[in-house]
Image (tube, rainbow, N blue to C red; front, side, top):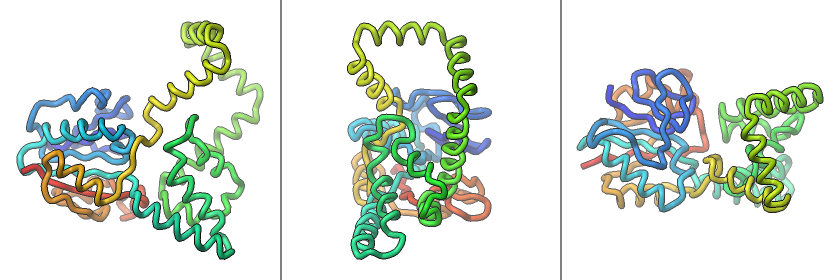
Length: 278
């Protein structure tokens, strides 16, 4: 099946060609997608990527989509999934209004929507302020957050809680540090030298810069209008918003890439859009 899943992460299908920046499972090809899509012209009937495009700077996103266009066959379909900026902004404004009127529970919902809109753009360490939100026991508006983020919320909560438990164990913390030093001695030596040369402030700025170029932060955001306009500018035609289980792709729902076998959407806060190559 000549279907291509770019930036697949841990959600991929064995019948597809799957690519990510690092190999995340059996048959997943490791490739830096900032350097292009590593396939010949007109090689695929379908190109799909989910929550990838927003991690490219605006100018680089155009170049990346041109690569997607190049590897698609004529009449092929591109399916793009990104955070839905319009829906985030509308719900943020609703939360702001209801919190301002003192409606019960909406102050916490407002806090979450502000994070959802802004945190992954400005964060300077992995997880950002969202991880701090998940560390609350219990998360005061868990039902609201889970409704927004879906299964991603379950995974994030489990990850944060597990890391918090490890951090409380001083022995385990020192053990992990010693294991890292033992397995990465040259990296540790390099960091020590650079820290001595730069001083504390400049070294910390370097670490922030390194993190922000590793790919976790959002470099741009899209609504249905701007994404459709971008796809048209590349040459795609008839961009159309879709539901998670709706697609021009044959047997789309059976692949469970945007929704599980139970029909639940993996990332409910998403915008799903398809277009075709003339």
